[in-house]
Image 1 (cartoon, helix red, strand yellow):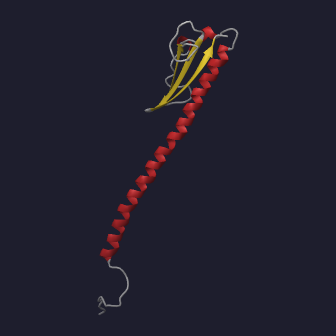
Image 2 (cartoon, rainbow, N blue to C red):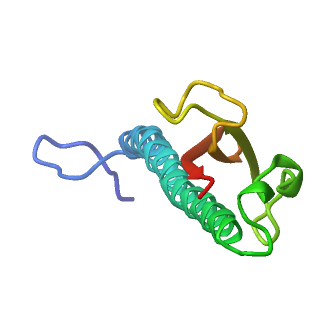
Image 3 (cartoon, rainbow, N blue to C red):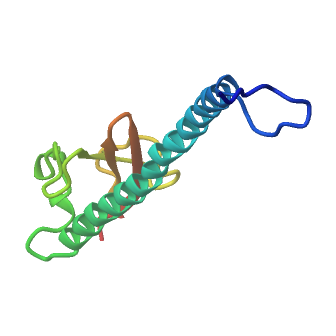
Length: 140
């Protein structure tokens, strides 16, 4: 009959010690994984921000090309010609709105109907975030 006794020079871990190490490592790794997962979720936001900026720039370019189109011109720049896009075609989750405000030519901020200057505001939103780009078109 062979007996196993703990002797002062004996090396190794007991079953209880091994289980405790596994439990402690499991708890620690859970916390670390949560940090990495939240970081991955946040990393998608900059990509969506860049997409939103590009979608807003695209709409501003379209508006200015129509402003310089001799068949349309400055008078075509009106909210009725640019309805809200919810969602933007081909970009699920992104919405886009365009507003026009006639503004004073001296500060380009103060509303001034008939001034010959229109402030164009394009807003692209996704989730709870949004990007707004503004420009001014003149009647000449």
